[in-house]
Length: 118
Image (cartoon, rainbow, N blue to C red; front, side):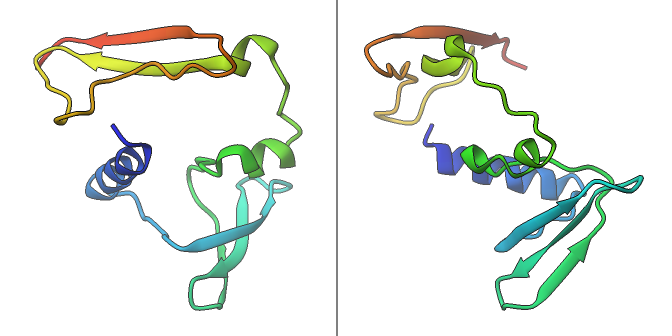
């Protein structure tokens, strides 16, 4: 599955299950000094926003906004070349898109997830 399509699927599923989704918002600051995190940033239209979420998921990728803010990032040589992918029984990959491990730097490590069909 193409990563962008998977991300969109996760986003739509979260929204369908009641999550309040803010798209095209740039989080510029995370304040963790109080009992709940406070996010500040700029929305797509240029207006400033502030949100105090019940739950916070950092999906900023390598930017790792929250991980950097809380000094949680640690380099681990083992995970440098690790690809995680899954196979689901009873399901077919889209035409021409069979799940493939992604070798990085000539090293291939696999973690395979197998789920039974519902």
